Amino acid sequence: MPSIWGTSLEEHRALVLERLLDAFADLVRERGVEGTTLAAVAERAGLARSAVYNHVRDKHDLVLAHTERGLKKAAEQLHASHDTSQTADRRLDHFVRTAFHSWIAEPGASADLVSQLDEAQRIRLFSHLAPMTRMLRGIVEDGIVEGTFRGAPPDHLAGFVSATLEGYRRSLSDDTDADADELADVVVSLLLDGLSGPS
Image (cartoon, rainbow, N blue to C red; front, side, top):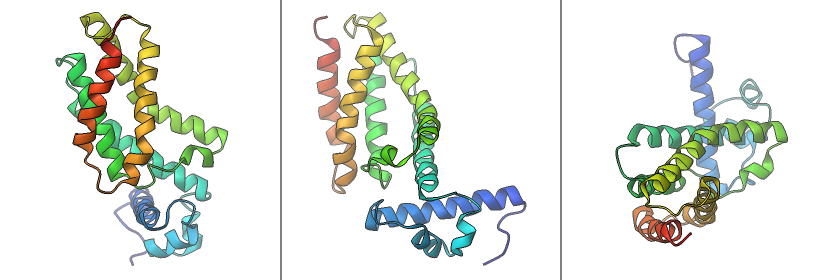
């Protein structure tokens, strides 16, 4: 292994962190979050255990970095393909499908990672959720304006959607044979029924 990966120290640190996160993701698939140790991550990444501490403080910090990476990927996918010219119900369908696909692809999505973080780390994590939360609220607000969704407070409707999706998160990421699109067909239909019913 070269002592420096990339052409600069900054690039080296980014590449090593990616390698650590890839190793963590692989081990979470095999052993779960609780069964994954920093020593195992270092070994899988081909690094000395002491080198891990140059990039993360502890396992909680590694869990946070792993979760942030997954959220960033999901947010990028949503924003890259979000078409505001579409009707609110079509945009909601896309939002749900993207979330389901990302949970299947992301090991550890079924785990309650938030419970393993301290307060400062939780605040940092929730800041990464904010763009997706704003997007969902925007979809709901547009649906109300269009008359597609009931005229209830947008925060209540967005909360209803978020709670419903959260209910599917664990079971979906635990089921390796799950069909994200097939499940999305059912869930979106249920959500639209709830969002468009009488106020």
